[in-house]
Length: 53
Image 1 (cartoon, rainbow, N blue to C red):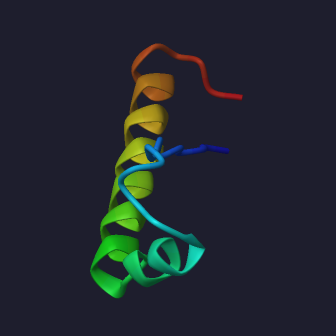
Image 2: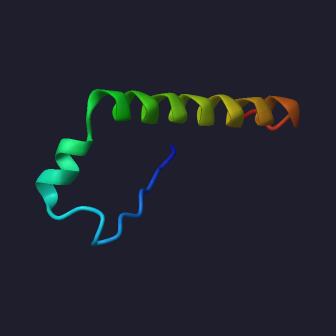
């Protein structure tokens, strides 16, 4: 399981609605791609180092 945290300063977004508005399709697709790459990298290192469970 992976977790990604975006640290947002108080001055960057005025309210929750702005955060929700920012979660558009392009952003969510990029996040999904990032998680896929993270999973692939992790699986590759397990295989490369014979740490398969």
